[in-house]
Length: 211
Image 1 (cartoon, helix red, strand yellow):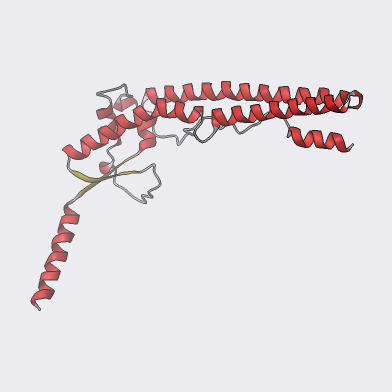
Image 2: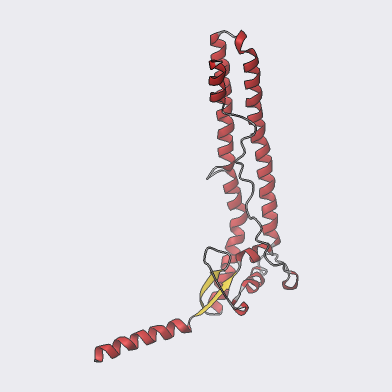
């Protein structure tokens, strides 16, 4: 019986400690959209993405032009010249695909450029959240915009504006009265998945041979 009372006491103490803990949440989308430097970073990323995409499309356009020229002259070319031209087309296409991977691949230039521009801003936001959580004794701070689903939360537990005020001590943020609500706008840049108008050079050459 004594053991049962002890167990119940431990449970009640644990429950009271849990209930005493303070919780809050932020909306990281709202925070980011009210930091001008973040919007500037997105614009810069878009500019890089557009320029690199044009560069890649130009490479694939060159492959298309080489193939059309080869196709028009193939019947007049000796076999050794055909092989040389085919090899040139295939190498050009490979170079275009390699460039595409370098620019837009998993660890490509766009990925590192995003880290360079966005990560410092994210770190300032995290530091602000940590500072508020420590000074106001919050045990947990959830991100409303993250993967965690919050079905209901009272507005008084939303620290987003407080975080923006704190971030505003180290970088420019929109004034509280001028802040815009989150638009859930896309935060990514162009993916660079478009490969231009080029078909696969190997397939085109094989089809030409079979005619």
